Image (cartoon, rainbow, N blue to C red; front, side):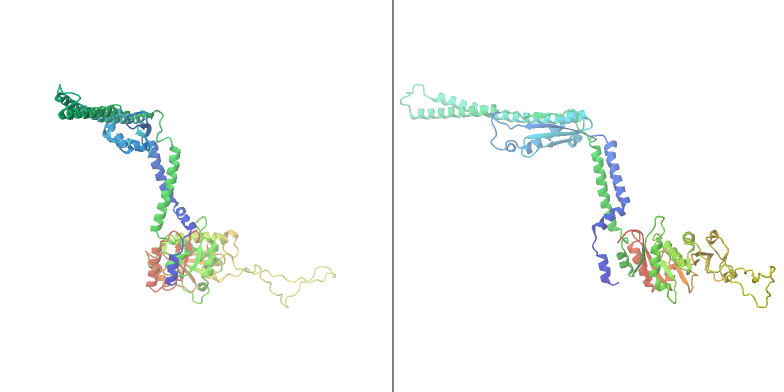
Length: 543
């Protein structure tokens, strides 16, 4: 496989189905995040104290001289709501609410919220308390404190303006009195002197100024300083944080599932495992020999194993059969099931197979082979049960008839058949029962270890019309069909050493085998001069 194929395999498009498979494949992560979020929501609802929120609405009125006049501009132009919001959250209001509710000023500042809609003159005071009474008192107290504070501020401003007008009026009045005293007493009104005319003009100006001042003062004094009124006072019952508990639980569940999906995608991007055969082929650089699915009991599908044997036809039918070494990076790829399944399928087809195993995996392999023997009981070769009788020699006299002269038939002599011939294998110590029952045929036949140490424990299993002999991994050299179940290659080099004299078949498990480990194993094989013959992909799923 060249670099172009590798790049195309890595840059293949990802469909919606594969994206949907990621949360399903990592369902434990998704459910774990959902459970954590639900626990947090339950703690908020039942462990933490409930929060009661009361709201009071206040209509803010502008300062006008005529309370029945209508402002010319918009309502928000008549009253600066930004400034009013600052007054409503000032320290004076918070201090008064703290005295009413008995809480700290910092807690009151966090619990009090003032909402000022754009283009309106309605303010809403929301207060969150630990009880209904506290929430109601806090909201109403904040509204009343705001109105009292606003009215006091405007009254102080009006008092200052009236005092200034009064001082100015007193000054002008004093000037007018001085001007009046400067007028001559005997001056004729028909022909006044220039000085008198000037004093009279000054006196008229002072009178006009006093009239203007008096008019302005009256306007200021008649201004309506009413800050507004409470249109909707808070009263029980008030909503609490536990009123919408079912909705909060549903929202928490959905939020947890969403968070779990995001965590699953994040872990998928960081955890590079073999997902498809294209990814495995890009990492191995060898063809796919077959996909082996798993049945419910965890055993490989036998039909997939038979197709795998067909894919290995060049090795099975070859003149010089080198050992077939089954390798895997780790222990959870299903390598032992593949090795035992290949040996069982070959034996069921009539071959004699030597299965090389390690002492660590001997018991597991034996159990797998016994299970295969139960599915494929031993079958004897077809033999005639009754041998043909020997021909009667010509010198054998015919028996005389005891009947009358009318009975002239000659009865030939019948000879008893010999017992069945003993097979040649029985001379070497193998146990083959020719006259066994169906139950005896299902028992595994064993023979002791030979002189060359070929058998690990002296056990030979008959499956179908063939045999599987369990041998040691290091002493499995033979000209027949030999399958070697190598230990995890990243931690044990015996399988790689055996692959130097045989054919290496890699086993990768979908959603389990890490791409880095598989690539590392292929690099080690090629470093010792072994080119992988192919790979087998195990596990469920579709490409």
